[in-house]
Amino acid sequence: MSFENLQLSPDYKILVTGGAGFIGSNLCEALLDNGNTVVCLDNFATGKRENIAPFLSNSNFKLIEGDIRNLQICHEACENVDFVLHEAALGSVPRSINDPITSNDVNVSGFLNMLVAARNSKVKRFIYAASSSTYGDSKSMPKVEDIIGKPLSPYAITKYVNELYASIFSSTYRLETIGLRYFNVFGQRQDPNGAYAAVIPKFTMQLMDHESPVINGDGSFSRDFTYIDNVVQMNIRAILAQGEAAINTVYNVAFGERTDLNELITLLKSYLSKYDPEIANVDITYGPERKGDVPHSLASIEKSKELLGYAPQFDIKEGLKNAVDWYWNNLKK
Image 1: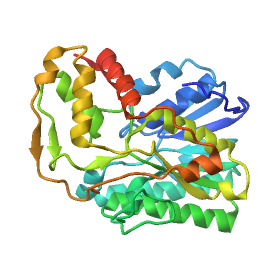
Image 2: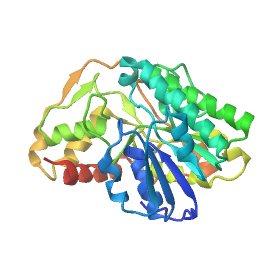
Image 3: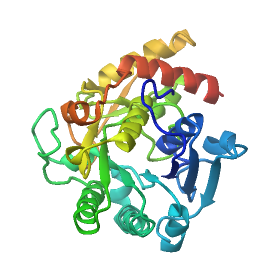
Image 4: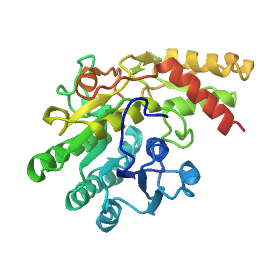
């Protein structure tokens, strides 16, 4: 994506942890297109080498293969870096329920390692992937940054602890931090495979293969689905943020509208049917609700607009059209 009217200096050296992942690789691509020097730190536990293959020949791109649970690697990655975009984490609520220890090791201990390394290297700002799961059992709608509930999964706990640690490092060590609470991000390069695949790429691939997608519950659960280019924009705005009120805080990153799973399936079938009319006839299966799932999620993006100038360009329909085109053209068997 282009940065539109965002003036990000190409002189900055920026570390993207988890840079071979879905969000991380999109950030790397946008920064390289802007002329920035980019360091990618990834252990390829969930990241894909093919996501960064096009960048390896770029002299402005450096890959460090390593794990954020290794403090020495974190220090190496942060050396002479201006900004850190910390995307490395083990995502997925079900994964954290099945294996809370590893989720905690990566998402909490690894996060703390990165904070320490960023502080010691005197980076200008540490911008990190927070999560809408932090809202937990809060019934308030839309979700406003300063009103949260109790976490509903080990994953949600780890992401909330990240916010607490970031706040302490801001107040105690004067490390500038900004947390970005992502709401159901989707788009190109999001992995459709595996037990913990996100719903949009998983459903897309199943429909392309004429398999019946399984909706957990009755399809009434809703999400504020957020296209990847909106997320890239928000990360750049976090780098550019000025003023005391805009830093050392957290922001929602979303579009500000919610779509239920039944509506989502209808849109996917419609957009995919232009490639293969038979997809319109694929049946949908309904299964039990998943443990730890929040019924509804809708973000207020007023704070993001007011303090960072956030202006999401892609709603669910435009984003899905782009995502479907990418999956069909890149992953169709």
